Length: 176
Image (cartoon, rainbow, N blue to C red; front, side):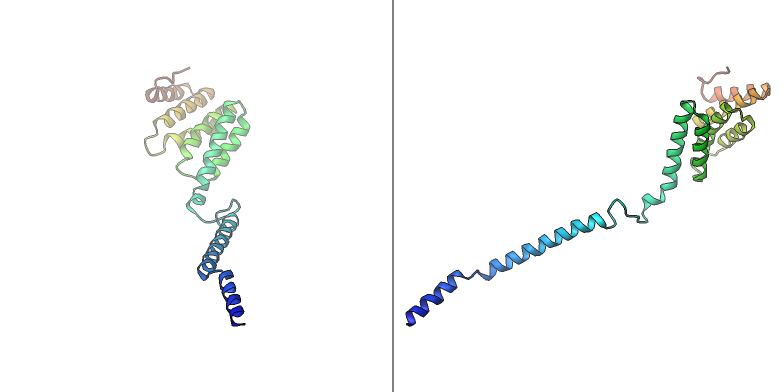
């Protein structure tokens, strides 16, 4: 009888899973759960598409928005849709990004000339012309738009001077 008991005990020992295997399986399960939880959290957490986190990317939003509106304004003006171009240029100005103001105003001056709003065009051109910094290309276009507005108002002597300034900055811009 004792032999029978010993045989049954040995058989139980042989069928039992070693502790090392159980521990390894447990660790693998914990790691899998952690990976799944991490994936779920990254889809719903601050890295997800709907998340609004105060980051430096959000701080540049007015600049990005103004730049996009300016670009759209240029495209609309090039297509001859001056009223919508002016609306987008005004919206870009409303973003109040001082580094883009001269560029936007130079573009606005040309749009305003096309709309027959010559005094506003002159004012917009003057903002671009008087902006600080090395803005040669921006200034030559602003001078040219200002000259077109002055010419339309019959102020030919001032228009000639503005055309001369535009040509001095960019020789391809000639008096019409």
